[in-house]
Image 1 (cartoon, helix red, strand yellow):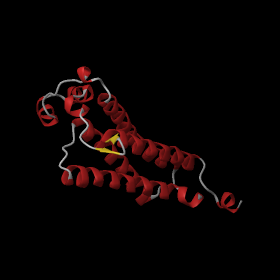
Image 2 (cartoon, rainbow, N blue to C red):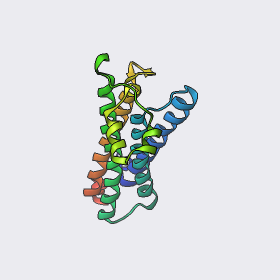
Image 3 (cartoon, one colour):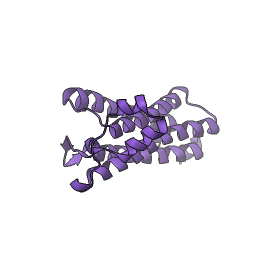
Image 4 (cartoon, rainbow, N blue to C red):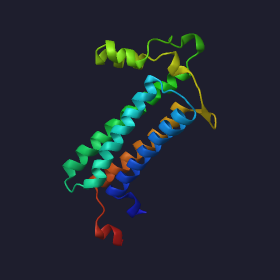
Length: 176
C-alpha cells in the first residue's frame, strides 16, 4: 500500500484524474450529449487543468528538493481548490428556489470581450440562470455535484501528498 502512495505515484494519479475528468467533460458531456458548459463549468475545468499541469510536471521531473515539491504541490492545490470552490458555488446555485435564481445574462465570451477580468470573475461567480439549470444527472446527482465529489477526492489526495512530502518513505519504514 505504501508503494501506491509514493510522491510520484500520487502525482500520476492526479494527472490521470485530470485527464479522465476533462475527457468525460469534453468527449462525453459536450460532444456526445451536446451539452454546452456554463461559465462556472468552464472555470471548474480551468482549475482541473491547472492541477493536472502541476501534477504532470511533478510526475515527470520527480524533484528531490522539498521546497520544489511544496511549490509544485501548492500550484496543484490552488488549481483543485479553485475548482472545488467554484463547484460549491455551482451546487449552491442549483439548489436555490426558482424565484431566487439569477436571470440569464450575456455569455462568457461577451464578458471576456467587453469587461475587465476582475469584473468577469464577479459576473461569473454571481451566476446566471444557465448555471442553475440541471441538464443531466447520474444516480440523481447533477454534473456540479459529481464534480464536487471528484474534487473532494482530489483534495484528499493532496492531503496524502503533503504527508509524503513532509514525511517521505524511507527504506527503514518500508522494512517495518
